[in-house]
Structure formats: structure tokens, C-alpha cells
Amino acid sequence: MKIQGGGATEPGIFILESEDQSVLELTVTPFPSGCLGELPGVECLLLWMPGTLEPDTAYELRSIRRLRLSGGRFLLPWGRLGTFRTGELAWLYPPRWEESAVQEVTGCLHLSGTLEGQALLWLEADGAAVSPAMFVRFSAAELAVRLAGLRERVPGLRVHGIGLDGSPLMGSRHDPEPADRSGLTVVLTRLHPNPVGPEPAQEFIELENLSDTTVELEGYELTDALDKAGDLLPAFALAPGARVRVAGKNYDPDAEGEPPPEGDLIVLESSLANAGLANGGEPLYLFDAFGWLVSRYGGWIDTGDAPGLSVVRRWAEACDVATSWMLR
Image (cartoon, rainbow, N blue to C red; front, side, top):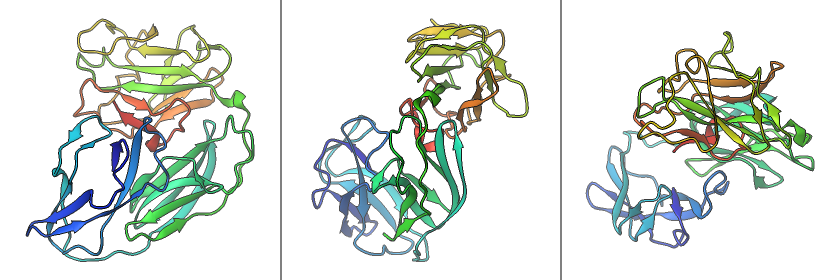
């Protein structure tokens, strides 16, 4: 649960109402990993039930006071946040995390594994959360923390989690060395695969220079598949902290209903990523002029039902994992 402002942890704010009008008062606690990656003023909460719910029963989640949700809209008193129906069997068991890989990718240490069960997962170092939490349900997951720019050794980095039954989860300990800030370079910060206007003409991506020096983009390559050649960027000097929009041929920066460029614009001689960006979500990779992978997007968000919205990185230095991206 994400809201703007405080006070939601007071007793009696959230309730569950069943189809037979019985009411359960929920206990609210702050999110264990905080609200990393969210805008300032957003509070992330966990809602706890007092016991096991009835099987095969419909429930409505309500708030007894006016709330401002993180998306900007207000929920009126006794407003309905959502509905769900329980299954026929009541079962919960502690989740189990099996780590499968630890590797450095584009300046971040990535911990990958598989979760048996259902849980919220995040990364902690020295008792503090260092990555946003993600909900995982019987599937593979990947979490990461950026090493570039850290001044001290990252002590006791490991996956932490909490199951739906409240049971804690803890992965193996890692003690990575920090990386030099010079490792920060150009990253993908925005993808616009489903424009209001014609596709693929109005599609674009945006790049940002995270380094302290100007980066020459000539020879950088964008591709949606690692086994084929992509789009080579032309000569362009990207200043420190600057952004540039990259679009395919026939792109109209003044098209009605489309977000105007906030900085410079590079127009390629072909469509982006060969035939354009897929609305349903597809990977995109950025290689530098020497062939090193410097940034990637895993195609984690489906924009098919969101024309005119972009997939954006939550903050520029966020790692290349699913929790670092949102639709806006």
C-alpha cells in the first residue's frame, strides 16, 4: 500500500469487509524496506490481517478516512481500495529463497534466484534497505544495488524478505567491494513504445550521462536482441548530467499529444530497434563504442493499454532490474 502523507499507521484506518458484511480491522506497519524509489512524501505500508480469512469468500479492502494515494487521486472515507476472493483451501507456509547467481552488471551487483512460495523481497546491507521491495510469487527474481560511487565496503549484503504468513527470509551474505565512480556512464532513462501518434514514427528513448565528463555517443549501439546488430548512434557530445532523446526516422517532435523533447534530439536514419519498440514489453540494450554493455531494460512493463505514457527509470542511478522502472 502506498499513500502520500502520514497517519495511516493509526489503528482502525483500514478494514476488510466480507460479502456477509462482517468487518475485520487490519493492523498497519511501515514497509520493511521503506519507500526506496518513490517520490518524497510517499509512505509505504504493510496491512496485516488478524487471522486466517474464510475460504471461498469475497472481501473488500476499505479505508475509514480520506486518503491521498501515491498516484495523486483521493480515496474518500469508506472508499473501496480493491476486492478479492479467497481460495477454497487455507494454507500458508514459509517461503524459501534459492540463490542461483551473483554477478556485476552495468555497475550494479545483481543477486538472482528462485522463490518457493510468496514473499516481499529486498536487499539489505548492514541492517538497512538498499533496494526497493518486490512481490515475488513462485518465480525467479533479480535484485541489485549500485556499487559505483560507494565510498566504503558494502557490509553484509543479502536478500531479505517477509512471507505472507509474516515469516522472515534471509539469503546468503555477500561483502562486495565498492566500484570507482568513473564506472557511471550513459544509461537508458525513458522508453516511449506506445505513442498517441503513429508507430513506430513517434516512438523514442532517452539517454542520460551520469558521469562527470562529456561522453561522445558516436558508435554507441541500441538493440533489442543480443544476437543481432542494432542502431548505431551518430556523433553527439552528451554533457555531464544531460539528457538526449533518440528517435527513428519520420519522428515529429511537435506532434500533438506527444511529450515534447526537454533537451537535444537525435533522429536516426531508421526506425528504433529495427522495426520499432514492442508495446507488450521487449528488452533494449545499450552498448558503448567499445562493445561494453552499459545499460539495459528488460521489457518488464506492458504499455499496450497505456498509449501516450512512457516507461521511466525511477531515478537515474537505479540498477537495471524490474523494480527500477515504472509507467508514467
